[in-house]
Length: 267
Image (cartoon, rainbow, N blue to C red):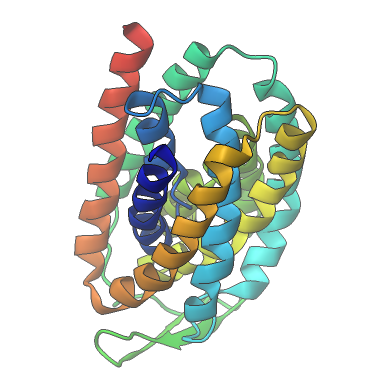
């Protein structure tokens, strides 16, 4: 019965995670720890497996629609993977309660960072650095843009990878605001590119968790199966939604689960 519950939850997580480019760990970990009494580090291990599944399934849609900036994703992945290795090594030696507090603080940061930026797909222009374009599925309009502050983006991606390794969230909670706020990418492109990156980042950390025996197949297998289903639906929904709606959903998810994780850690 518990496996069926995890499977059903994972479908919803796959939809949300693939829509918002966060891999689902931000939703999955609080549910597993708060409502199903799964130990924190076991939940992180299952989350890493789900992030890999989300990334793989979502990219079938995002890459096909041209929303994913693959060249930028591969560039940022260099420092992100290095950060993930360091974060994974730190996590296995840190208490679960400490991870919960850090997790909540990062969620609050991500929510408020997204409120300071325009979120429509108008006004973006090529910059001469990794210029690309895509067709917005909602408006059928062409959106052309370039990347700004690439060195800053690569430095911040190390931090994103570090958090991914420690918290099992794929790094999307930092990568999406980073690409939208600092590198000035359209929000939908940031979601898609984040989804592209989180699979590689999570695979790096998952290897460390597996070696430590922190990936429980009774939790990870139904999680991965459910996420694979949900991650096929999320990108299709995101493409039809307004960017402001996606931003609101991103902020709401962050704040709700930050409050829950703080309560769990204090209790």
